[in-house]
Length: 130
Image 1 (cartoon, rainbow, N blue to C red):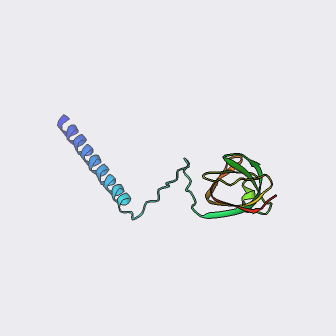
Image 2 (tube, rainbow, N blue to C red):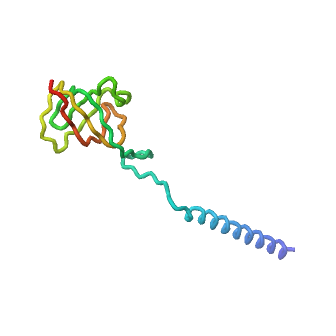
Image 3 (cartoon, rainbow, N blue to C red):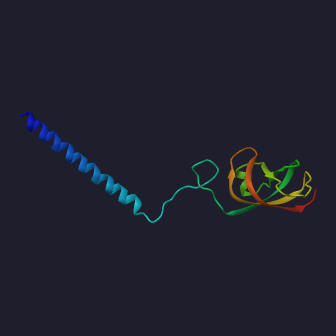
């Protein structure tokens, strides 16, 4: 009687082991047969993907520092819906900016939802002096 129970237990373990192995192989095949993987590879620390489209907006400089300017987008600019102030880094920029100067800001990527908002600025153009 004990030999029958042990035999049945061995058969059940073998069937479960084989079944688990088959399921594993099916899942593995499904994953490795994909032609593309959609991994999110941004560097901003979130799980959101980063846009690489170029955008621009017009605004007025409302604060000036040696390393950044704060720009207020004009009322009709789409970026104004995100923030009324944008922190613009002045990397490798020798231009002297003045409060009240109208500028065109060109940037790449998305708007970082901080306050003031931050963007990956690629160009700052003076449209008109104060």
